[in-house]
Length: 156
Image 1: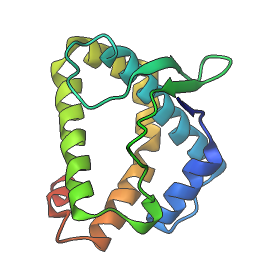
Image 2: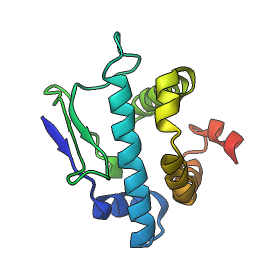
Image 3: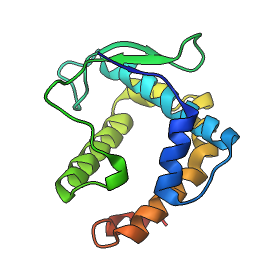
Image 4: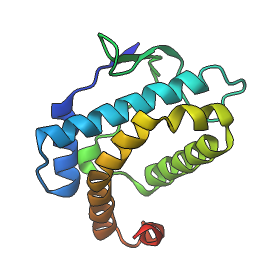
């Protein structure tokens, strides 16, 4: 099993490495809460789908930040590994990631339960407040790999 517990310090470190900019603890707390809550809501919706619309592990528990102990407990894929994000992704990994992001976006727009769950008022507020950090990451990635990420230019 893998236990995912929200940790602002890890989020802050990851964003600083991605953008080269320091972000306040308050901003990182907002971003971390938004990410964790969105992930828990997503897993709650997807866990009852059969067949699964996306590649997701078995989820044993998904508690958001409003609970006493926010945590996600999920299946451990023994033959898989976590890529070192500091070294960057290979082209194959990048396309697999983009494929799953596109599938997730399509699912979140086309599935009524997902739309209702992921578009709650509290989630909208958190996402709108974390937007500047995400925009900064997208710009940094685009600057670092313009030939591979030219499709992102549409968003700017």
